[in-house]
Length: 212
Image 1 (cartoon, one colour):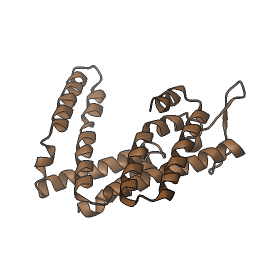
Image 2 (cartoon, rainbow, N blue to C red; image 1 turned 90 degrees about the vertical axis):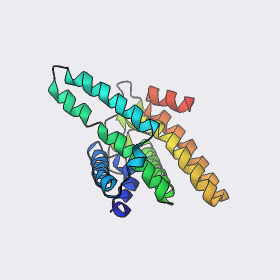
Image 3 (cartoon, helix red, strand yellow; image 1 turned 30 degrees about the vertical axis):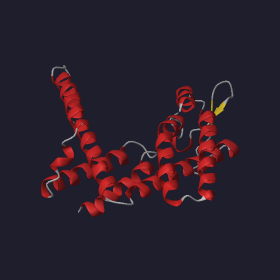
């Protein structure tokens, strides 16, 4: 069963730019199926590591805090955090046991960046993006790019936080192919990402990308 549903992770980078519903749906589906396979295939050894132990301690304390709070819905919300720990184990399992998974995931991350770069610069140059979302303006008539996030200032945050994963994807793929053309493409995408983050005018994102 995991031979099929593990492919959902390749759509996760694209799902992240659509809003919270699709990414969370992908995580929940993967975690649910992987828990079934954990018992079916006896994959318990994958949970016996320091990362998962530390995660369980963290989960215990935040749920303990929520349990004694006045709002019971907080406890229900924090209890659901278990899916992130299990998803991390699932991701590790996929990357370890499916030889080309890291390359497919890398291509997916690169694809998202290419799509956002095309859309972001289209919005900056022509005033509207591919979905006709207009270029946003401050009261001072200073413009800023939002791309698929419409009127929400999230593009810079997304790009700056995903940039390390982009660079890792480039490194993995370059190790496999080592083509000069790909070096040039990787450099171009990285440089354009820096420029696009500056066009979002998000100060925290600009700070993060400069530190990186």
